[in-house]
Length: 154
Image (tube, rainbow, N blue to C red):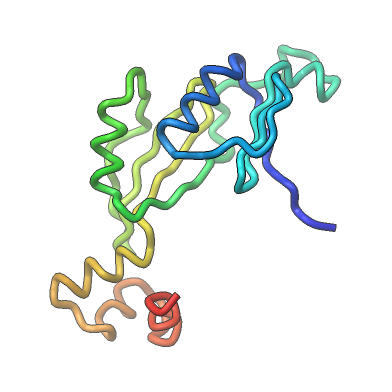
């Protein structure tokens, strides 16, 4: 057995496809009209209640019980791209977690929560550029020196 994908219910397959292609650069792997699979394991399904055989009213909007997570090497550039995208609803502003990773959360057109975080390797590089030692970074991020070194060499 292997994990195949995450399928999210969408109300307008074309609008959702455009959103994920334009903001995240996702590429369609399979297109079945009301079902689209992107490379990487995310799929969009219009008419999800029909497919799953469940009542339409049982599909919740903005349930806040999961999020789609992305990491971005050029986090600041992505924030500018996000600001320019029409109709984005934010959960809040940019947050920097205790380990140093910056993230932003917002909703897709159907209310699915999305987190875009700074690529963790870029966090380490940002700390190095600021003059921190690997030991200091290890303590700040609560990650072993070995794991940090492995991460930087990937």
